[in-house]
Structures are given as C-alpha cells and as structure tokens.
Length: 258
Ligand code: 1HE
Image 1 (cartoon, rainbow, N blue to C red):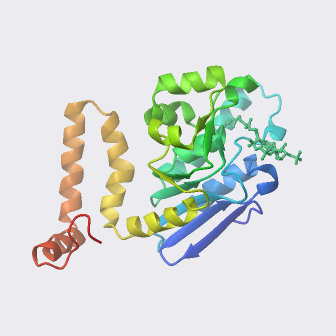
Image 2 (cartoon, protein in one colour):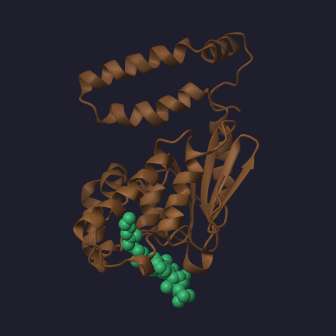
Image 3 (cartoon, rainbow, N blue to C red):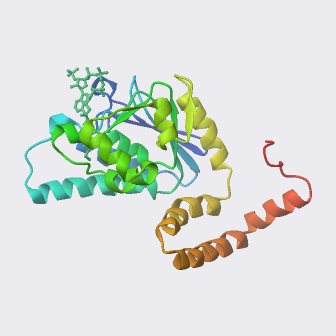
C-alpha cells in the first residue's frame, strides 16, 4: 500500500482508486510521487480486478515537477527517464486494467501517465499539451512511444514544436480519450467503466492488456500466431466455457443490453 502523502489509494471491493493528491501543485509529479505510483500498482491486492487513476483538485496532472528539474549529466538524465519508464510500465503492464479519469490539465508527464492507462475518460474541462517543447526538453516518460500510438507522430511533433493545446472535444477526436463526458463527471464514469471491466474473465483482460498491444506491433505473420495462441489459452479457461454456456442457455445479456 502507498505511504506517500501525495498519493491516495482506496480499495473498494474489486476496484482500486489511485488518486494523485497534490492539488496545490496541480499534481506535479515529483520523483517520490512517480515511485509511489509504481509501488501502488506493483502491490495492489490480488482481489483487485480494475483500477481508476484520477487527480485531486482542478487538474489531472501538470507533469514533471519542474522544481526538481536540475542540471543532470547525460547518465543521470538517462536513469531519470528510465525511472519514469519503470513506473509507467507498472501502470500499463501491471496486474489490472487502469481507467484514467481526466479533467483540466493533462500535460507533459501527466499526458505520458494518462497514455499508459488502458481507457481514458475525459470531461469537458480537459486539455492536452506537451510543454516540454517550450521548456527546451523532450518527453522522457514513455511519451515518444505511447503518444504517437494514440494520436500519430505528426500531431505529437506539432504539439511539441508549436505548443499547440488540444481542448477536450478535439482531443477526443484526435484519439487522446475514448470517452468525452460533461464537466465534473469523468470520475464517476471511469468508476462505472472500471466496474464493468472488472467483471470480465481475468484472462480476457490479461489478453487485452498484455497480448493485444504487442500483437499490434508485430509483423502480421507473427501477430496471427500470437493471436491464435492467446485465443486458445483464453477459450480453454473454465470461466470462458461457463460464459459461453450461459449465453447458449439464455442466461447471459445480449449485446447492447446489460
Ligand atoms: C508546478 C507545476 C509543475 C504547476 N511543476 N510546480 N509541466 C508544465 O510545464 C506545466 C506547468 N504548469 C502549468 O502550465 C499550469 O500550472 C497549469 C496549466 C497546469 C495550471 O494552471 P493554474 O493557473 O491552475 O496553476 P498555477 O498557478 O500555474 O500553479 C499553481 C502552483 O502549482 C504554482 O506553485 P505556487 O507555489 O506558486 O502556488 C505552480 O508553480 C505549481 N506548479 N505546475 C512544479 N509542473 C518525464 S519527463 C516529463 C516532462 C514534463 O512533464 S515537462 C512539462 C512540465
């Protein structure tokens, strides 16, 4: 469990709510907070089936804590970036799907953190930016890998070269978020989605978190084989057989009806 004062972790049944809780500094990510995020996802109780990641106050996250940005030589800069990678790896490839509830600023390292989540729910107040360009630095929290996969490298280069800010609606169209909801409702919607995701067969969620993104990056012939292997494993689980029986015997909800 987390002991960092700026990170709040609540467990509610099979749901974990992880909240950046440093609103006075717009949830800027100090090194300690980045490591606390890593630890929180690494040590979630085995009973948790899905998580919501949110930010306290008016903003999701203002990115790297600039007050800690110091002169680093190349080696120290490398290790700092790799520390972010290790932490955000625990979000993307940790034990459970993570639903991000976004509002206000989702900028810099905050956008990198959001990009490591599996589903992003943004409210109307959300805006996305990569101020690294203006600060004379580069992304270092996995953004160069994950953000182009959401919006394309051309849009990302434009954001960093020109300081372009995407507001909520065009951000959703560009691919930052899968859901756009009215102001103040992102958290509730994210919880609703997380509860639904938590009901999936664990192997289905595992396949979607761990196999799908890798298959999508594989050459087609390798991807087809990985897909077949994952499909065979998922369908052989007793839970999968039960779910198919439930449908055939009229006990499961039809598509579009809950
Ligand atoms: C901060 C930070 C921060 C706010 N580090 N202290 N990220 C940025 O370049 C974004 C910088 N932040 C902003 O542009 C704005 O703060 C916001 C648009 C996010 C919010 O504006 P606002 O008017 O609500 O808040 P504010 O008055 O600007 O900030 C409130 C306080 O938070 C203030 O401190 P105070 O002591 O004067 O009250 C700010 O200094 C502080 N604060 N953001 C430190 N980021 C792995 S590499 C990733 C590289 C990056 O992420 S670079 C991008 C960094």
